[in-house]
Image (cartoon, rainbow, N blue to C red; front, side, top):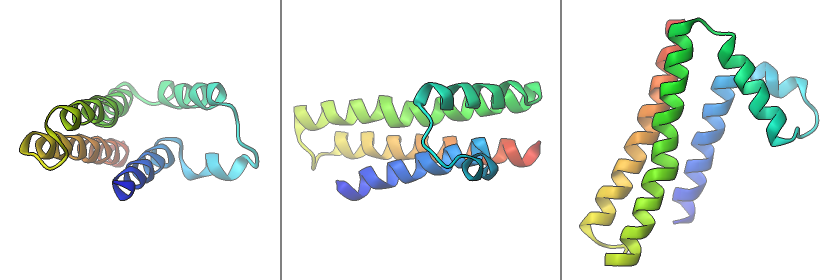
Length: 113
């Protein structure tokens, strides 16, 4: 379970690096507050053409649906029927699928731009 949690955060970090660009990480030598990071990301998205902006928002929606929505569904499934059950394995598989599709969609959108 610890490996799955760490791979989720690793994917989230890769998503943000791809979205913000590596230069954003090299310019800051301190940790900015979350509101500033959200503002920077919003400025980044607003500055893109309409089709790229739509692709980034769709990728984020897919990824966050997997991270938040399916994770919650998986936790409820574990509580109801246990960790080693078919419903939990399906929820876990859907979670990972949505996360991967979100990242692939982001990469596709940024490469097409």
